Amino acid sequence: MWVCANRRPDGNPKGSCAQSGSEALRDQLKAACHAAGLNPTVRVMSSSCMDLCEHGIAVSVMPDDAVLGRVTEADIPALVEGLKAPGGVAAQPSLAAKVLPRADRGS
Image (cartoon, rainbow, N blue to C red; front, side):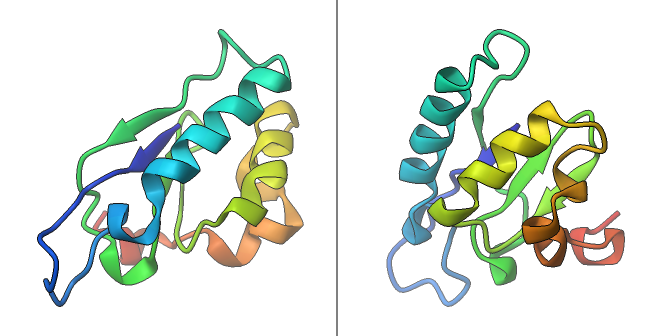
């Protein structure tokens, strides 16, 4: 799982995931996965820019092929459950609205 940690200069009109708190979110998600016993099968890492700034903090989950936007600390329990469940994170009802369609992610 990759969490965008791109940081643009202050004042950049696009903003950036890091300015929205992605680094803290990554650390919290990493700790939650560890507490759930998902290590070593799940790895939470920083990513450079995913070019999804307009969607808030972006998270990419492989092999689910799911990219989520506007991810917050409140989403961490559903992300962890999705990593453990068949269907992956996209199948979690509370995350469904955050899954970005391919057209929004430049694919």
